[in-house]
Image (cartoon, rainbow, N blue to C red):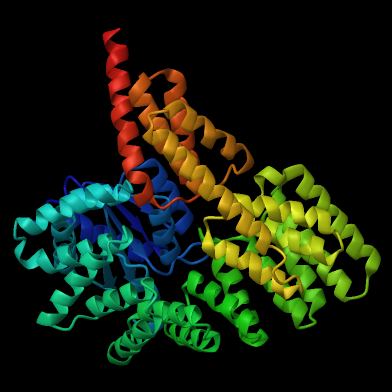
Length: 544
């Protein structure tokens, strides 16, 4: 029997009478450490200051964050240990609510009222699973996927019995994450040879999609949806496969079906808004954009671009007053943020221009130019791309070309973003304008990498690092440059020995790579190598 005396528990419930009833239930199970929160904001604050083993969180929490948003934020910000249990609780069994909650994968889902025995049974099941995967989940939480795979393989080698299928599922997911598709495919196929499980079918279809076999993936996703229509992830991946084959109308219809089932998922609504904009379905785009803004009000996923996207759709629908009002709301919601101010100025210029108000359009565009000049280093790539587009449309080609050149140099290894650059150019009649620069930059990057690797293989570590450091100055956000430079820098440190200076420098580039969103599996080996050197350096300092 699970001992709850040693567990720290957070109870999140807005109704005092229900909170008391659940509290009494917990005390009947000999719970000793209990913290209560009557709303989502206080729940997040409690998780920031306490370490909890169990969170019992109601779905409906009145004004402010709901339980789903508490779960999302706790996961994204890693406010709970990897072995903590998050139990979603609700008094309703409305399908859309249940599916929206399950979409975010709480550890358990309970309907009120529940007995002490039922709660204990669910907690025992959860902690049995948590205990079994403790090392694996801790490694995943640390984004050390190589170590997670090692632990998972050991669990499978030890014949885990009833949890073997769960271990295989986790192992296959890890294989996909590190792009070991053959291992994942073999696991899923072996499972399906024994019995049909929707998650194994889903994994197999996902691999087909990732390997570029979109038509095969679409066929399997459609089969999954036909047999298991509540498998929401299948809709997302099917829509993604449709997009890869330029079937945008089908992608839109697929996401719309998923949102009909579970309307509370902000990221899916955001994706629908994007696709509907591509298809020119302004009615669906407006509805989805409004849902995103509303759902984002108390969400960790709230972003200024949701407001500007809605403003764009409203402008296209000739609802210019509403569009300007949304942009003003965006400024209010995100004060003192240069990126937000720039977004507002760009789209206000566009709206005033569409209304024929030249004076206000020019004033807004001038504000955008000034903000770009003042805060260029702090602006994200998406808003800089929008600014380059605005410059082209306002006959400021030289400024636009400079912005585009820097974006291409920094993100030449990001295929999706390079495609976005080409798409932007096409929408304003500048087809192939960036092609030469993209081609030249790719050649330059290949040359730098080849020269750097050559110097490294010849044992000229310092010269190789200097070559990449020079490239870094002109391409400070290029992931390939940063990764290769850091790898060689660590080899150079092994050669010459650790110093305060070179270890600090290596750590800077590792942090930079993380900030830029380099996939954790690409960083794992680098981080482990740095950790070994750091430990060695620390021990040498102790001896001295």
